[in-house]
Image (cartoon, rainbow, N blue to C red; front, side, top):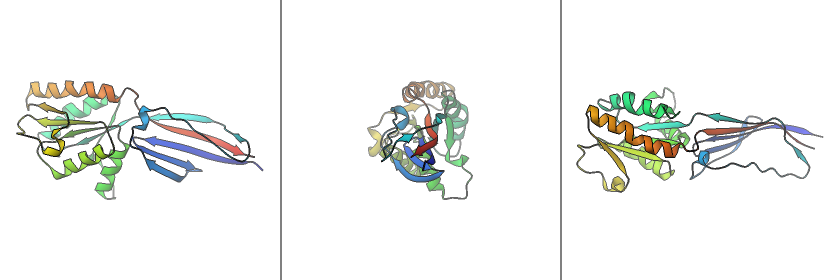
Length: 204
């Protein structure tokens, strides 16, 4: 007797999920950006397996923005960072854009997991910002760090990471527009997240 199964493999950032008949049966986080590697699907069973209606659907990659929710950072976000990321095809997400009833920290960590790149303004010093940057680094996420040049020195734990310093001026904003573009070009060399869909897998 043949039993048809609907199988989906969902890939988003470093999240990987396997669904059978719309039920998640396995999920994992990987230390690499899955969207930057080649994926293969391996099937094994005691009888012949037939694959039907194989399809790949691409999603827009996500850029998660980490920063203070006040001026002048709101202006920097809306006028420089967000449009800059969108010009590379990213869906831009910031924590204050989330309107859910769940725990905000859970929403933030999930957004970091699903993001293809993190852009973080680490001025002024903020425990919340540093927590999110640290979590992104732990997941090996491509991270672009920004800092106002008035910041006297960076905390020791992140001082070894490359940081793009800018000035709060028209020229400074232009620099913060141009410099991250090189980083985004490298990150988006293999853009997008993918979802693999097998609509009719059958075993006899």
